[in-house]
Image (cartoon, helix red, strand yellow):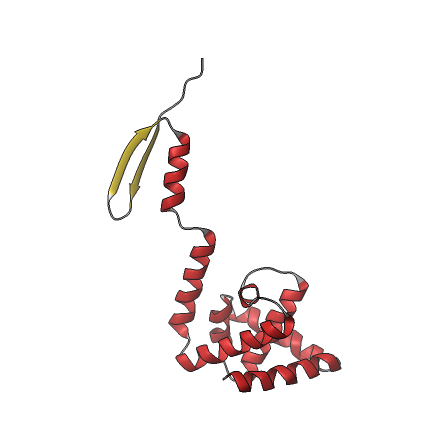
Length: 153
């Protein structure tokens, strides 16, 4: 004989819901409907942070740079803004950060675009600058991206 414990859930959002049931699947469906997904939460956070710090001209510039880098590297812009640490994505992200800095955005402003601390931006920009000293292909790519950004603005 199997006994099932009744689940009791009390939710306080806009109104209080108190219910009891033996049906675990019912509770899973209820919680899934009430809880936003991680992706939705991340998008909301990105929009909140980007909207809080960026002026409209900075936002246009950041979007133009992200679009140019994403097209050039064949990587979705959302992945460049994301948290993945695959070398291809990290390199594209660092180049985008470098270009934003070259166009006059401050480290905290760039950090708000990528949802990262400004010291992370400083390290990424420094790595790109170090590579630009000896990497001819990267110099060419950055120059091409700068031209594309000018067109997209």
